[in-house]
Structure formats: C-alpha cells, structure tokens
Image 1 (tube, one colour):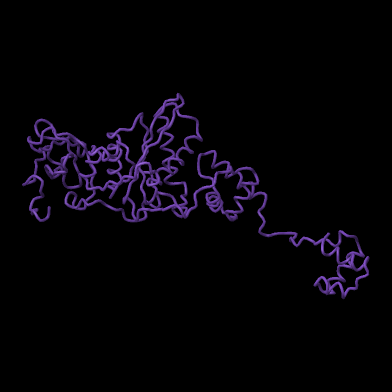
Image 2 (cartoon, helix red, strand yellow; image 1 turned 120 degrees about the vertical axis):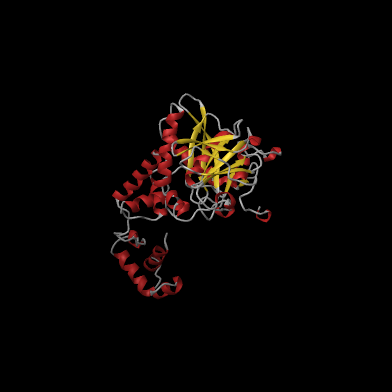
Length: 398
C-alpha cells in the first residue's frame, strides 16, 4: 500500500485529522485535500501516482528512420563492411537524414536482435596506441590465409601505410616467399615512393635476425637506407593495424561466394582494395577514407640524399652478366649499362631517377657504378670516377 493510501485511510477510517496527518507524514494540508478529493471522486486507483511522461516527443525516432537503421545494418553486414553505430551515423548523414546518437542506434539494433553478445573486452585504457606522423613514415606488412572453394589454402600479402591505413598492396599467392615480399615491396616503392621504415613480425620472409643473419629483403632495405622494425616475438599487438585489417578483409571476402581460383580471389580483393581505400570511412581517421589521409600531407622519405639527390626514383633488381653489364628498358628501348667485369654475377639494385641510374651491390650496399640517362644512346658507360663514391665526394662526406 502506498503512502497516499495510508494517509487517506487514516483520515477516513481511523479518524485522524488533516492537520495531524500533515504533521505526522510531513506533507502539506493542500496535498492531503487533493488526495481526499481524488479518493472521494473515484477509488483507491485514483491515489496511484500518474505518469509524467509527455504525450508526444518531437525528438522521438520515427518508424521510417528506425527501419532505415535496420536496413543499413543488414546491408552493410551482408557486404562484409563495418556496421556499428558510428558507421550507420556516417551513412545517415550522407543521406541527409536525422542522425540519432550512437546509444539510440545501439538500442534500436539490440531491440531488433541485430547485436550479438560479445565477451567483455579489454578496457581502452590498457591499450597503447601509436600512429606515424606522416604517410610513408612506416609501412606495415603481414599475410593471412584464405581458402578457395576447392579447399585449397592460399596466402594474402598486404602492405599498409601506418599513418593513413592506406592499403598499398594486396595480392594472393600459393605461398609467400622472400622473393614475393621483395617484388611487392618494389612495386609499392615504384608507385608511392620509398618509406622511411617498415614494421613486420619476425617471419623468415621478412627477417632472419633471430637466426643471426640477413635475408635478401633485409639487405634491400639496408641498400635503400630504409629502417626495418620488427615486433616482439609472440606479441602481434605491435602490428595491430595490419592485424585488425585482416578482420575487415575477411568480413568482405566471407560475405561473397567462395572464389574458385586464385585469379578470382584476386579480383574480389581488388574490389575490396578500392572500396576500403576510397569509400569506406575509418573511425581512426575522423570518419574519412584512407585515401584522403594518405594524400593530404607531405610524405616521409628515407635518408637517400647521396644516392637520389632528392629526386623521385624507381628500383629494379638484376644480376650483372659475365661481361660486367646489366640491361634496363627505358623509353621502350633496351639499354646496356657497363658496370665492370670485376663485379660479374653480383646481385644488384638499380635506382633509376629522371637523370641517372645508380647500381648498388645488394650484399653490402656499395655503389658500383653511376650512369647518366641518355635517350639517344643504347650503351650507358659508368661515369663514376672512384668505386663507391660520387664524383667530387670527399672522405668526410662518406
């Protein structure tokens, strides 16, 4: 029995006066008379407190907006894209609709059974986030497995810019090797310029430092003046961006019919790369796309001033032949570069910019020769006066 019932019955049935009831129950006489009037005009139900909820709410979510939120959730999920409240907010804003709060969207999704319960996650305060300040300051790389319709397992290799989360490269292979890592890295350098550093795990395709040696990829980075960073063994959180990226990619791939061949899977991933880079908003990028962030500021560069003299360049791998020469296709024509017979059969890296070609030894990063680009000639001799030095370069500048 409520307090209102007790007061009224004490007065009507027990003979308590209004003044005594007001003093005893710490309530005003005016309020007691209101209760007595309500009781005399009705019944005990009249003493129940009435709801103060307004009859209308101008901020209430309409049925049409609720349905649109549900449709967006289902469509984004079916396409293998993120479909959380923030992403739904982004799409509602693009459609010029009313954008409710994330808590309201989350409540609607839960009410319609569109949220799967998850185990309690680590608190955000336990995470130590870092992000490169410039594009090309750090490239992360890793690979993940996928399964074709036949059950055959393949591996997908990625290169991801740390600052912008821009997907630089994505390719499918039967098995990732060091040569494939070098080839993919070279393609990225030729298209986007060289990074200042790389960040990978300790897979043998990236590093053999734990075996007290250097593989071909490590030697290439040393040659290009690029710093190599590796995560702590058994601590994938160091490469957290590319590890989290794998989840996003798998959602996209799993939302589509399983590919029959590597070529078919590559086509699916090419579509994903375009959507991920140019259409999908990223929460860590203030709801902008990776492409917008990658191209919005100056890019970092490695310490290659002596070799490239601050010009853009591309790279090519080759081996010097028995005559001490390497070949290079330039302007659609094959050119012959005379290095020297003493360097025959050496593996080299050629740095090609707009004016010259520099040939470096992969093993020790020594500059073997330098060739001025001459479109009118097919043979470019070595213009370097002293092996390992630029013309006019003194010992103190080395």
